[in-house]
Image (cartoon, rainbow over all chains, first blue to last red):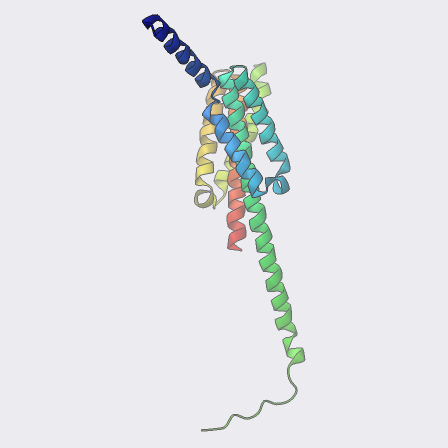
Length: 133
Length: 83
């Protein structure tokens, strides 16, 4: 291989790498994508559907801006998407904690009602006398 | 002038959201990170307003409000767990 060919190959590889680097999405997009996936897995569709939709829509805008080379715009959309996704996930946590607290409260109410009714069903027979030592 | 009038509703709302979060007695315990993030975003929005950057005012106001709401949800979670 001549020195000229070697130089051309190295230049081509360099250009390819530069192209790959340019196509890498900004880290904000990756973060937003991860947060949205986490919110989805946690159950945000049930507890925060509107907020989750907003996050997805902003992530789409971020990806489109990144494809057009508008980095600042992509970052801004991605940061808003991430804020939406975090809010959606926190609504899931709050919703499930609320639900659990209500379950506990219902159980406590049932026990309380049972305890209130207890004197009405008390045995009419006197208990046998304990032997005295 | 026109810009200030247009930007202020979102910025006013963000100030109100962050204020409401910071006024909650559980904010420091349950949502200190969210409160800190919301305050930083709000500060950026205020700075953008002084520089006349409308898009940035709207962007940072939005972030501040969402972060404050996230903080409120963390507090709700904490309250539900304590019940």
